[in-house]
Image (cartoon, rainbow, N blue to C red):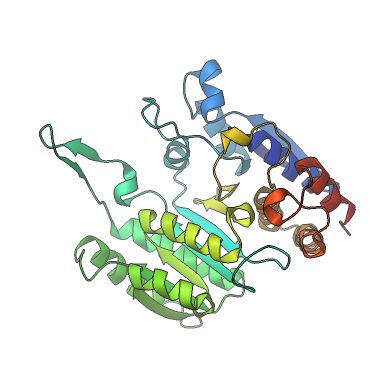
Length: 332
């Protein structure tokens, strides 16, 4: 039996996480769910978006399945996603952009992994006002932070039979910060001669991704760039509705979808839960349950390709619950 922390999150989080949980349980795996709160729905009970009890649960269980968390601008509350990553030192945010037949997209067969450093850069939130009419954000890059995320990218490539890692920054302009990231990436790459290594400027990367996404396999980059590029690659694969991923630290793994909490769709039973279901499959693979993970992937592929019982964004009219049940029916 496995013990896993389960965080429903905000907005559509409860629906998509429950879809994922039901599909996971339908594989026959024995999981004890340790249900915890985070995000806006944690505030009434805990007064914080990242309760310490939730952090302690993940530290104990080592694995979590997490729904999307809402970051309310101007609320005075810290970002729940950033807060959780900081509390657990989840330094590598890995996002999969994989196209599935049947998903509307301009590209077919896209399959790209974006490995995003998740602790540093301007997303660390080190900002201050310079007088009443100016503001500055500090871009913070360290050798340690870069080395561990680039190493994780290469290790992930090896574990998932990938052939190439591309580092992408803006070192031609930001010569010290992005220059340090690029320098360290080159050093780390020398330890993995079995994996092809390349590098590109971040704006050129975006252009080349749109022109020919098949030139890329695993992309490793800084925090802010990675957030943007992972949405771009998700769009190439058919949208955020199929974007799945994980936050990794040393000995810790928190699995999540790429999309946000979309509160206006909460409770309507119409949202696409594919990303969360696929994140659950990634979790099973992480636990060593490769056969059960494959069952989920195969079922999702079958249902999407058939295209008869799918949600509105996938070209259908089925409810979230109906789509989830169809995936469960196709598990083998």
